[in-house]
Length: 223
Image (cartoon, rainbow, N blue to C red; front, side, top):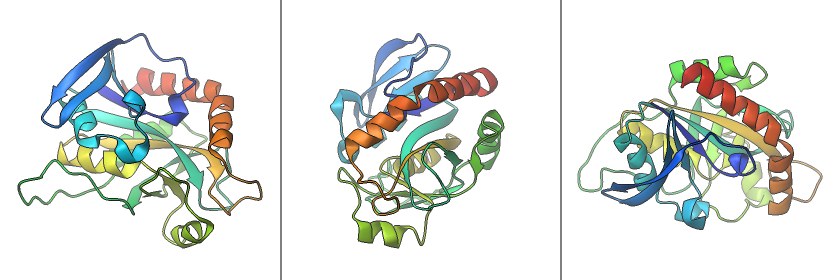
């Protein structure tokens, strides 16, 4: 079963007709919407990014039978060349935040990463996307400072607050993982406009039809 993970970028999109289900996991309950796919809305219960129970969320996908997961992520661009409104399919990630794990009582070594084969399938569904790039995760909930963005731009291409955690846990649970980064803004200090959360929401709202089209392609061709 295909798992779709969504946040801000799916906030205004029309979603498939799915049944809301609460899944019990060893890390607490998590809400999924189940049907032909499994949909996880990461900000369930109104959680901001730094308070999301990632182990519960990704474990719920595994319990529901998800065997590949595609995450939609709203991101800020760390490069002038990656313009707001564009789409990037990352092939690696960096986390500046504490990385969650399900291996709380043992030492395990799992090769982290983004699944190349699944990402190739995702890229084929979105020919206009940029293939490859590094996603940098910060802890949130605040937007990064200009100095932080300047430093992060040396190691990454886009910045967000969730995908690295989701990718790490998916790897631990043997779920191939890919991400679709919807570039909703330039990171703080990259563009000339003053950055605000309202601006990010407005861009996500404006991109609703594009997001719905991409979601439909992913479900039809990969689901």
